[in-house]
Image (cartoon, rainbow, N blue to C red; front, top):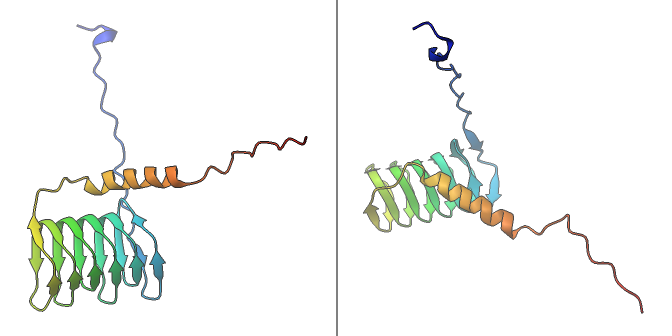
Length: 155
């Protein structure tokens, strides 16, 4: 009844992780390459590459050319490429040329969409799986800098 072995330990109180502020790509910035994030990205400039993130906001002045994979995607600007997200919202100012794979789709009056819309169940961690495979592929594609060339032999 009073033995030391039967003590119940209190659960450790770990502080909740502090959410990071959104990454903002301003209107005067142009990026060529893929974007990978576990947080939120707001784009007001130009991106030519694939985007994988938890939450994406494509601002009115933004132009994105590439595939988007996220949990939530709000489009107010221009997107040329496929969008794959659980929640997709197209504002009246949106201009999308490409297919949309979604669970929940809302389109305001005035939005432009040229492509197919398909409802499908998308796992919550879809952007994480894509991120890991993209990072693995990037690591494999990198030449290994620490390899030394074999010494040349002179005859």
